[in-house]
Length: 112
Length: 114
Image (tube, rainbow over all chains, first blue to last red; front, side):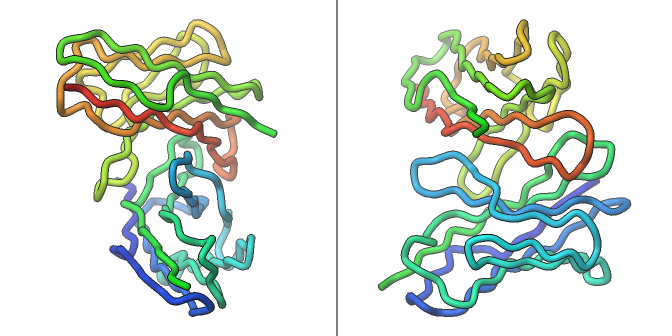
């Protein structure tokens, strides 16, 4: 079945550091890939997405590239801020399937 | 803006009580979902619905049921609450058709069963 494996946390970084959160997936066909973010006390919101191989999703300084050859969708940001502290979830949605499959989430804390 | 609202942010119930969690979306979405979120386990799908009165089991349906009588409203029912159902419950909705569509989430209900 479908699965998403993401880097275990928690991750703690200093402000302005470079961020990478790894995500790899297993799915048949060519799923759409998503990163969601959950700020403290809130529900999930979409951060970025990519729907086909080599697509790059980007938003708020975050980027992720859909790599079919390595079945990966790693999240990156060049310079993190305290306001980026949140839990980040990688997810996939297979074509013809309405359901999302989520990774376990990575808690990110940015210290000033 | 898509809005998904949940009836309560925090709820405390006793073991054995029947519990109703309500979710309403205002964007005429076909699909609605209930998840529970637990530390280290991520989000797990309990039930989803792709149309009024239609439902499908997700990965962990045991101990739960759902109701969708109107398109905008999707209810999660705990028939007899137990302490292992203490969790954060998240509702989501999405348009039907097309794998590129995202799901829109409500703020969550933190349920404690004592």
